[in-house]
Image (cartoon, rainbow, N blue to C red; front, top):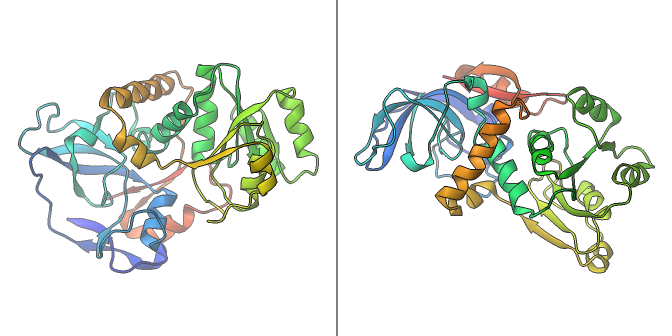
Length: 325
């Protein structure tokens, strides 16, 4: 079979290449899946660079989330069938024509969900709903997030209203405000305006902002902290711009604020099966209602991985980059 492999860590556009590998055999409790589509996530490319929280042994196959079709069942797997569409968000080595995954980690995909959406079902939507759930916010309470026009930012803004939670989005430029407004997402402020904090107060009516989500790092972390209420919690989800957060100590001290991390794969792995099913069911419901949208910018073949990895960081990208074998 063909797979996207890197023999060293570095720029994904330079170190990833298509190589031939043996087709894997599923062991007990495992399933072999034939790949249909796989999204490129930032953390996939950070893993290839060797800068993510997980560092694979080399040579390694890239990718982590996938939509595929069950191709073979290992011993003891009874709840899945050959030919069934499944999605997974934690399949290390997903960028291969066939991969093996634990049966328990596979989510059966309903017939009405298109391949392009199903390929993105688990990692970002499930992380977003898990993050939202972990904040413990009640109806009418506010959260603030930067990277509001990123994948998780859009999903949080789409998922929160069903719980009555208000979401204030921060973007770097006014163009981001207009872009999100065109998608029906409001309560967004551009931080390139000197009066952006006054605009925040205007939108919230001065209501306390109990929680914040930082996906950017650098000075943007301090912007989130600056509008949190006393006793607020800032959750660090990503570091799109910088691995270092710039947060004034005074804000943390005098607000008695809490700063903590959120790593979706660890949270999911530790989650009880019934809790995972409840949250995934909420995602499916919002998707069926058309509330959650999972747009695709472009789909690339394995052979075009260099162009695909560069496209992932294109400014103005409005959907995921997908890979196909």
